[in-house]
Image 1 (tube, rainbow, N blue to C red):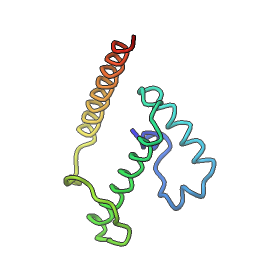
Image 2 (image 1 turned 30 degrees about the vertical axis):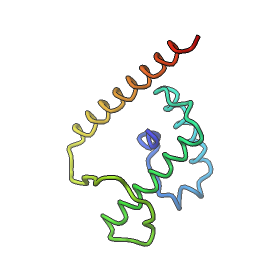
Image 3 (image 1 turned 135 degrees about the horizontal axis):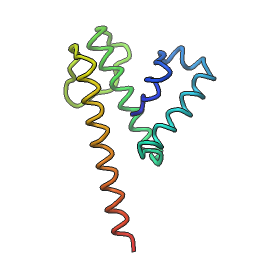
Image 4 (image 1 turned 90 degrees about the horizontal axis):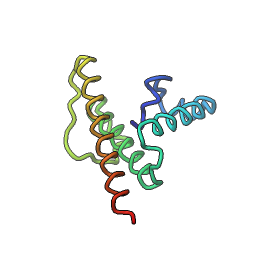
Length: 118
């Protein structure tokens, strides 16, 4: 969900995006709205830093695998990822399934926390 805003305002490469202050502001507001809708608005600073680290590692992995570039590759991912073509409907169905799974886990977690609070 960390890039969900890109579904609405498009993805822009980091070097260009860093120069677009209005885009960054709009992206941040939209991303926060999406996080709120899906119950993720209370991420800790640590959790946000983990998301950024994973995103950086995925970029490095993609650079190494798809562009055969080792210049920016510092992170390591657990496991291999499949970059084969998949029909968009399959991608959408998997995304929706994963979002529902995450929402169920978050709902279960908050329910368990409220039950344990006196």
